[in-house]
Length: 214
Image: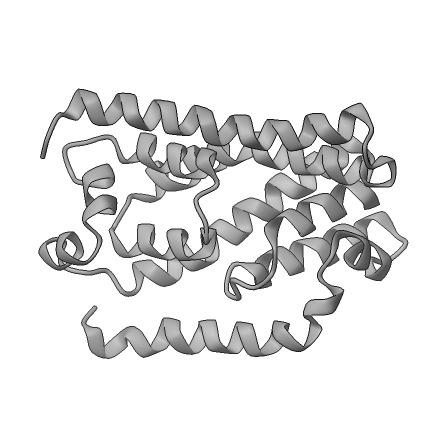
C-alpha cells in the first residue's frame, strides 16, 4: 500500500497508547497479578488480552506481562501462557504491517540495516530469530517493520517465537522469584537475558562476516 494508507497503523497505535497510558501505573508485574481473576482460565484469558493490547501500544512492558505470568501461574502453565501471549503480541503489529507493505527499493532506502538482514535471497527466518533473541527494542515496531518488509508468515512466526523463548523463560522465572529478590534464581534469570543478547550479537556478527560487504 502507498503512503496515503500509513494513517491506519498510526491511528491504531495512537488508540492503543491513549487506552494504556492512563493505566500505566498498573502495568507492573505485581499490579497485573493483583488484577488477575482468581480462576485459572479467566486469569489466562485476562493475561492473553493484555498481550494482544501490548502488540498495538508499545508502552506496555513485555517483561512485566511475562513476570506477571510467573507470579499468577505455576511454572509450566506460566511458560505456556506467556509463549502464547508473546506469539499474539508479535502477530498483531506484523499483520498490520502486511497491510502497508512497501516497495523493496523504498524499504531499502528507509531501513538499510533491516533490508541487509532480511533481503530476498537471504534467510529471513534466521534474521527474525536473531532479532528476537537479541530482544531488539521496541519489539512492536520491529514486528510492524517485518510485516512491512513482506517477510513470509512461515519465516516470521515460528523463528520469532523460538528466538523469544529464552527471554520468555527468563522473565517467567523472574516473576516466580520476584518475592525472593537477591536470591540465586533472581540473579540467574537476569543473567539469562544478558546472555541471550550477547549470543545474538555474536551470531549476527558471524552472519554479517559470511555475507561480506554489501
